[in-house]
Image (cartoon, rainbow, N blue to C red; front, side, top):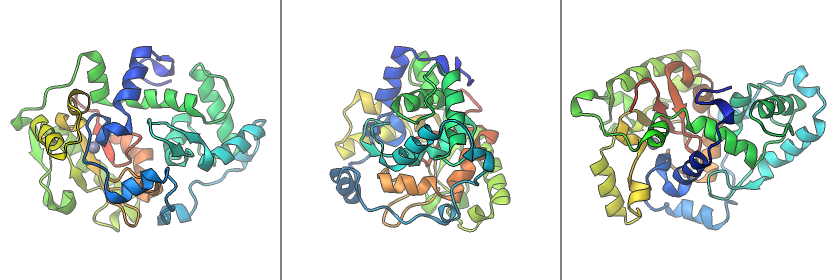
Length: 321
Ligand SMILES: [Zn+2]
């Protein structure tokens, strides 16, 4: 069971907030709309998400997970078969936008249900069924939209800004003396990055561990550099105005980046895409990188949680916003 009332917490109002606030229509981090999609993203969108798959990064070529004999046993073979098919072909809208398959969320789902089994195995289905029982859902062992809605609620409620919004509104931005500036080598492309002091210190501890524990991360100096940190409400408001792509209150009201606790980290990029492109092939590619794999398995040790639609967006939970 998870914190904040566990999986059974399903207040209708919260669900509505989650679904509305975290729609990708709201863009970056779920609370604020970014610039109009780039041409390549638009083309992908118009094609109904059927753009050519990007080549997979090295981590995936070695296999997504180690198989285990125990994974191949169990009564839920039909569920495993359904999961195998739906893995890349489930037609659904987990974030309000049509997607195909749940492969992009496989690492998060596997971590949520505590399974190291391949996603098409009876062992994975059995672990999911146990999770479903603990969350008051039918024990089908099949990943579907109802399962994902519950998981998403669990994940979202770990995000400080989401909890803050639920408890009373958008948090005030930190004062300037609460912010620290990242070193140039910690920033992607030389941008000036500011974060709350505790968040920057935790980020540094995490990066040091990541590079020591996963040599593939250290091989590319861009990995885990920060391309967005603290953004003032005024900055975001100006960006909305400038881009003519922000319908006021709903989208501009509360970016997590105003807290100084949120950061966008370089986790890789598919050929032809940027490190913050939400195009489906790019998001899928990112979730296969060694950097993202390490983060999903270890970032919690340093107090970080992910916004699941954006593999690059991480929030530090060590202080209230
Ligand atoms: Zn972000």
